[in-house]
Amino acid sequence: MIIRFIKGAFIVACVIMGVMWALYLTGEFTNTPDITKYIGISKRIFVPLGGALGALISLGILFLIKYVTQEVYEKIAPALVAIVLAMVAGYFIGQYIFFWAPQAELTLRIFVMVSLVLVCGFIGMILGFTRASNWESLITALQKKNTSYSNVKIVDTSAIIDGRIADICKSGFLEGTLLIPRFVLRELQNIADSNDVLRRAKGRRGLDILKTLQESSNDCHVEIIEENPKEHREVDAKLVALAKKYKAPILTTDFNLNKVAQIEGVRVLNVNDLANALKPILLPDEQMEIKVIKEGKETGQGIGYLDDGTMVVIDGGKPYLGHTVNVIVTSILQTSAGRMIFTKFQSLVS
Image 1 (cartoon, rainbow, N blue to C red):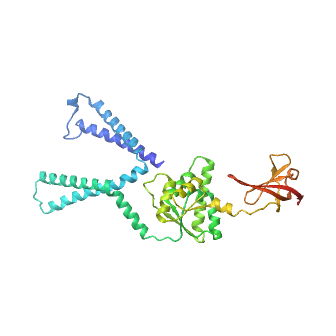
Image 2 (image 1 turned 30 degrees about the vertical axis):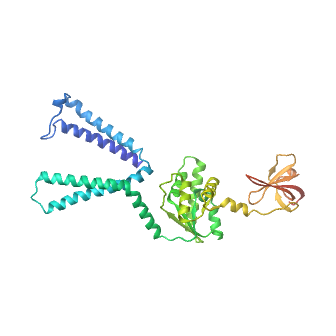
């Protein structure tokens, strides 16, 4: 809302400025020339034309600003700062010179001042566009040098949204410093602001999990870092680059990031792999109790689930829907979607 107000105020200001220039050029102010005598346009037309030109210029500027992305701005901003500082330095050098020569002619002053600003501006432009990235790298290196982390792990957006990371930290199986880059936090905020209800709920859940991790007094310490590898555009590539830089593993649940990181030689701590490793081991002919939740696809089959979500197919369990039964394990099938346990009904428990 504020941005729209600023844009509207800018357009109005440009229209007013265009009208003011038109009035100036038509001789409405004292000692100003009237160019309408030379171009053959009446003052009634020239003034509205100035306002329209101001509106067109403002719209053109707003249109061009749309093409200035965050990445472009981050590359240009250091160069612009260097150019402005160099031009200001040239101006003050000129002022210092003429402080010792107050009797110098106005023409000489203007000539020297313009020359100094031009030379210093050129130097600033060259240094800005060729050395700005090196300056940024130097600042980043100094910041890293002054910051020490222990037992570092880089955290991905998917691991935060998944939520199990908080329970793992609480249990004491995960310790050290969890580094969360600013671009990961920004991605999480974008998901929380999504128009899709499900994505918005996941994003807000992730923010709640992150807040819980920061406030909890366990062995995991959360640290937000500002480093953002500019040579990569994708979030996964940035995470891999940071993991190499810190020589740290990536904590994630993303299957694709898992594969890419392994190809790049980066160690991955996948929460899903940990969950699979913690599933109870069942052998054929082993007995267990399971509640029949629903019917199976085949005739007479019932379906139940273990506490970890593993599906149990019960042969002969259909008549006992809603009841807990005693079953015997017949076989176990491991698929890409997970593990399935096939059993047969033995007796009714409750």
